Length: 307
Image (cartoon, rainbow, N blue to C red; front, side, top):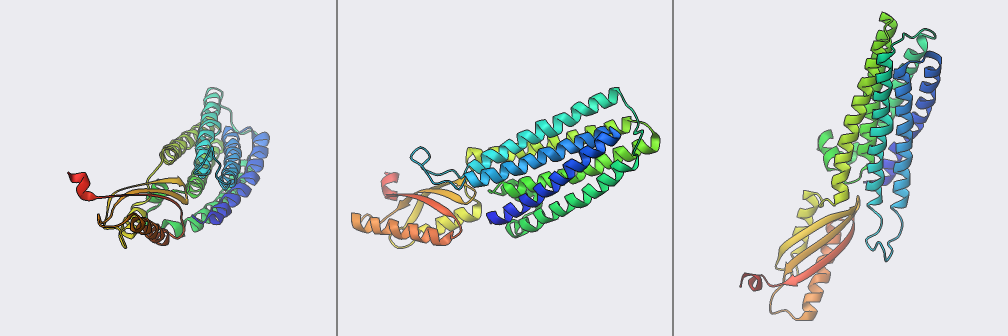
């Protein structure tokens, strides 16, 4: 992932959400619309989430230490997982809590009727700009994959997180606009409560999807099939007859651990085997030029395994 591109999308989302959160909260104070309160908390939670992603990206760049010899690349996954928890609790559960109270005490929007509609339309425009930025930054990395495949298989968490957050924000704004509009038309506050509940359910679904995907990265995912094929192919060459078995694991979005047992010729000397291993490592690094690789190769004889 071009981490600078990821940061660009995060900063665009952060700027949009901070402005939207303030505007929505002012609208809530004027109208006491539960949809506006849920959306203002949603935008505030999103702003905090984007700050977490920026902090995670910075902390992941720390040098390896004896206590963490493989570095801190997975810190980005930890912070992304925290994003899903915040989205679930501060965003989704709060919206459901507010909807519950509004449903049992419905009241129409009695003043400043035009404020929530204007605010929501403006927010849709700002959130649309943020979403477009995330889409543009993701497209070069997505390639031919569908958007769902990109979210499921991306090893860098920032862009998928921002994409889902921005998409959820856009859909949430539309739901809020529907609830507020129907409340104004019918003078029935239950529509406002329904819109708020819909926002809560939407945020919880997105949070669960994010949590499941980030959990898989935290547990340690293998490199992509394309990268595994490139590693396996490049290992075979001078002094290496074949690959007996291969294991890969992401230590971070751009960091891969490669461990392989390679077949060498039984007639080779120790010096020749060492040279073959060095040459194989060089070929692997050339095959994956954009990745930070940690490589461990074990020489062996295939017929020794078969006996």
